[in-house]
Image (tube, helix red, strand yellow):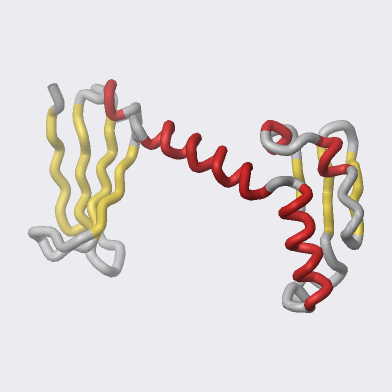
Length: 136
């Protein structure tokens, strides 16, 4: 696993660098840490390696990180640039993609958009229907 500056917002370099129950833990330069839990990547079901996975999650307080990321995702989803809906739609589609854009058709948060481009997709991923709606 490779960790860099963005990840250190959730887990400090010191916490990652102090993890010892692994095959290797290397600091690469000033900003990257590489942790390999076990030598063979496909050996993840080995009971010893499963314990290492659990130990690593405990060490970095994985559940706390997960909750932080959920809150962040909820905050970001409040004003999306793209929305995806699934269901059954009038032209036989199973998915709608809504792209919120400005007057130049550039993606922009929904709250600032001047129009929405709505594509209805079939099960094979083909666009079955498209419409553009002006927003107030």
